[in-house]
Image 1 (spheres, rainbow, N blue to C red):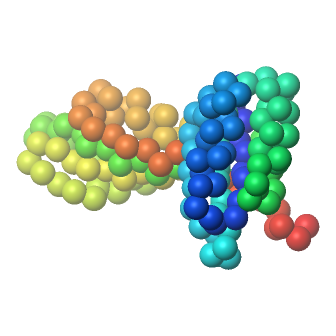
Image 2: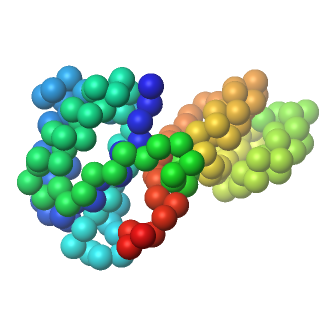
Length: 161
């Protein structure tokens, strides 16, 4: 089972190393990890997706909360958060397939960010389900390169609620 954690940390040198080291030292695998500053420049938010059962998740949360510079750990459950991922991909096109790729991009609200004679660079954002469907369709044309940001997530409720 996949779990999404939001970890608010002090924006200090070495915090990412300590968090990642805690995961690897205890045998927890990180599926995706995204780190970025918050509105308060002294803090960063890590969005971490991990696999495991509830017992493993409980251990992960408790161990993460104990780390120096960790302010808060939230485990997001279904419908409690909004999440997005950004993907950039280079897709092979021919004169015969270009219009079909463009139509699929339009349906998924993806953007063409670079055009070459035989390749398009496409940007798409969305939740994991949307991204997975789009990738599976683009595989039919040939994806020559791809990069993903990993999930970013935010609680549906305000911090003060």
